[in-house]
Image (cartoon, rainbow, N blue to C red; front, side):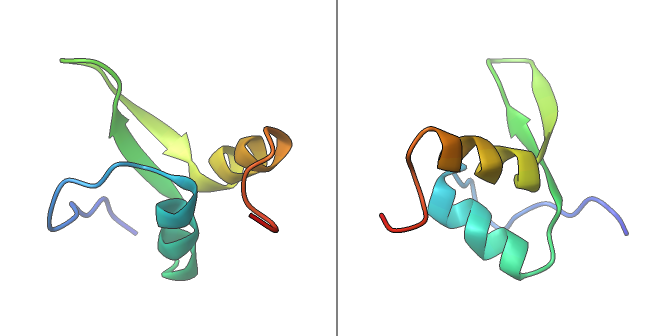
Length: 58
């Protein structure tokens, strides 16, 4: 397991997270501001999206 960059810039969304998870990706690094990068669990991201009413059936 290792960090691999994506081919192009991608905005993390529900659909993108589902596609990445289907390819076996579990964590992503996202830019949160100009110089701040953080690691995000796709599982937690998708669970939060479902709670907010996105995904599953939309």
